[in-house]
Image 1: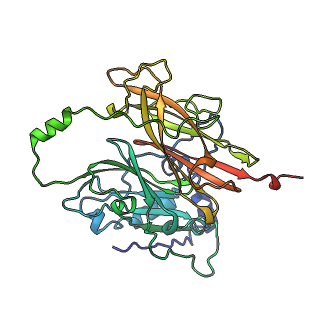
Image 2 (image 1 turned 135 degrees about the vertical axis):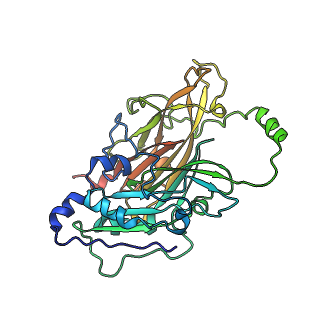
Image 3 (image 1 turned 120 degrees about the vertical axis):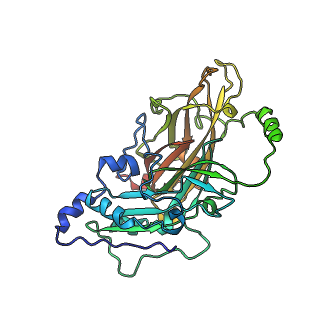
Amino acid sequence: MKPRRLALVVAAVGLSALSASCMCRSSRIAARSATVAPTSQPGKPVKGPSMNEHPFNLQGDEYWTKPFKNDRALAERTIFQSQAGLFIDGPPVVDLAVRNTIPIPVFSCLSQKDALAVPLKRYAYLVATRLEDRQTFTGFAVPRDKPLPQAPPGAQADESSMVTDNLLPDLKRQVGLGDDPGTYQVVLLLRERASNGVQIGVSKSGGYADPEVAKFIEKQPLPAPAPVTPAPGTPLPSYRRSDASPELPQTAGIAISAPRVSVLRQGAQVAIAGAFKVPLLKREMTGASPGGQEATAIVPITLVAFSSDPGRFGPFVMKMRVPSYDAIAAADPVGTGYFAIDLLGLPGVQPKAATFFVYAFLGEWMSGPAHVGLVTPDMLPK
């Protein structure tokens, strides 16, 4: 099904008043879809959106056959209730023996200025994390092997008009899931905006299931966790608490912080600092004794960053394995830890003036975006 684009024009109700109220200011929706940019400061955590919502009100086959049947109702809700933002949905369960796609309906409601600056069909980026092992899969929502849409001739960057758009990416294709079963936490990023999250259970029925083989596999020991990566450096990367570290989350989750503006002087490093507190998977525990230099657990964290420079937009992705040095309880094990990584060390990042938007993903939790402005010495007063 081909997605439709809805252009919403507000007339008799008073354009200026309604447009002002529809600008991305709602604190309630900001918590869900990150439409309002949080301030990034050392020690101050940046929270992400809600991570399991189904705002499209679809059932069963409708995710494949009628994914946008309720888009007008969603458009009216976002416009008239001042809920501008970015929304996704997805089928709660997908059997890959029956389906060969995993549709992710996407709906955006942005000012015309923002929609032209960061077009949905050019820059929308999917992140899916398999909760069973916390492996993260990423990719653009639109295939990059075809011409990408351009702004229409004469388009004006108007802040007073709101524009809606939609998109229907295939999660399986765009992030390369393959046929691996599991529960996937999915979110869509559009530079400094993050959608709500959805959970999708993926399975593949059919074939012969040998119960004795299943029992045998279940009894086998898990391999030791992969080592900490990237390796600790001087001063970065670091995996110990510092003055730049955000506070540990009070409940399970992850938090990141960063300097709001940094000057790109010779040898400068720009620390993206993080802290986490999560229930541990058995595969993440090392068996090491606490109190030493060896990690007692190692958890996977994925950083995803984008640049304000369209020519170097990104994404810039780094998959980390971060240690915890806690004493691990035998029952209901929980691990905490810290990390600090140089933004300029992310693959592909160049030391040039731009603003970066950084997200962190750990299992079903995310944090961000942290906003980091980079300026060069020649931009400073002389």
